Image 1 (cartoon, helix red, strand yellow):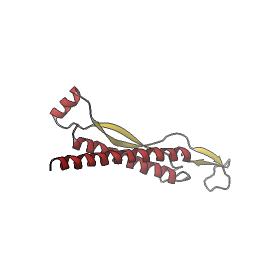
Image 2: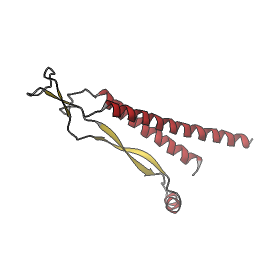
Image 3: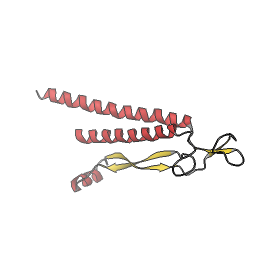
Length: 145
């Protein structure tokens, strides 16, 4: 693996983590939203991430098949949870049904905060990898002087 491939892998990791962070922030921001444009309460969303081969030319594909398969990550879609909403008894709420229950989003704030911490650490790991690559390239340039 060369310098630019390593940079591409870290850069795609940063992009994936940024998207995951935005989706999680949206979940947290809408944890109490009972009305949406689609109708009903907000539905929790999550980023679906897939490994994408870095190889673009035939020679690269052949090399990957014979050696280590190097891949980057990419968000392929933002999935919406289709589970049932939480029912909370609150007869004074404007969106309460005839029995006094309100359909609330299926967002668990604690789970989202834990996810946010994990995403933040993954982002920091990618930043650290990029900084290490930068340091190696600077050292290599200094050796050539």
